[in-house]
Length: 229
Length: 273
Image: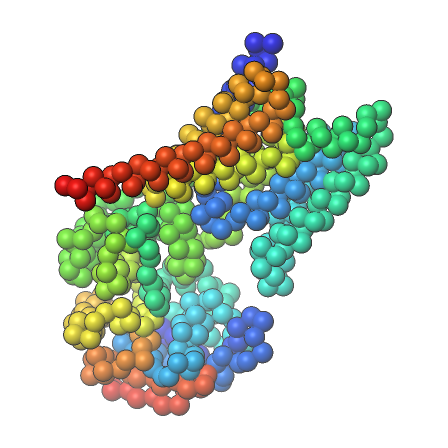
């Protein structure tokens, strides 16, 4: 079995900061795993995702993502990942429709002047149907609700057919009742696409019984790890 | 005289269009101060070229690129904010330009050389420069068309685009090269201090008029205001660079006000029905 993420004694800090954001992290996540990363504010949850995607460099230790050493291979790794950022809300005057925003996810894979191929059109259609957003796709992105924008961003990540999907506080703009539904959707996505999913959330309730592992962070350290298998 | 007027109209129309088009991209990618620093780098290069009797456009272009690369290095290696690095190098470029103008061995007064670079002159327009501007415009249109999806992704959210594997440095550098090219060709026509009005004035109009197709609106406003500026300059015998700059600023204000009034009018009509 191959690893999606391997961290060996990894420590990191933000540029110009005197504090260590993550310290001596040892973590391995198998490909296809569905993992919840939780902890209080300032624990280092988002920092962990930023480290994986290559926004931060390990100051100490070794980090491999999808078998590639980071940060040297960050451009290759980024193309194999989908990243849904925290608090991603755009104002009403955003000059793109929801469909245009989804299609932007394919940008790094396109050659100059390339249009959409037939199978890409089918893929987009399937993803939109899966997420139940095919009816809002022509609307201006900025006029959509927080939950709808969240789903559009998830669709954008999914059409990239990522090997590793990173979601940062995906429930923050979704009402309490819809959170479980969204969590089950992520579970289905993992099962359908065999994608490794790492979810950062301080709200553990919707995901607790669906994930393969729960990592708890506090003050930049892993303080607890639970794996179902 | 008519030939000179026609050349000036074509040159101002093309340069207004291309600057308006570029300005919208620079503004939306938050590269405004970078463009500002590149322009002053080009001004320093042009001043040195006059002092050393070299080709003004080539040295202006080279200095513009050099300043942009220095800013990027300061940003990438030393974590200095781009805006801060731009302002830091803006002062450096201005100082170099002033010293080079002061040291220029010429019969002209220092103030005459300075005014040529700072305020521009219609006499420097040639058919070759118009063709060069058209070539840059064509290259920029091809570039924005070829990388439309990547550029849209960057304009939508550059951090997200970066996380998806888009090479931000490549696109930032491409826009800087275009900026340096345009600025170095137009420097002596419009003048180093007035170029910004051509680049950023139409961007103001575009942002007030529409959320979509802003680059096109910027290009159209820049082009129309450029032509109007030349005509006013000829009619009233005013300095061409300053007149074009005033024309663009006035047009931008007029477009913004008319757009606002039209918007209010439409909202009132909708509410009444």
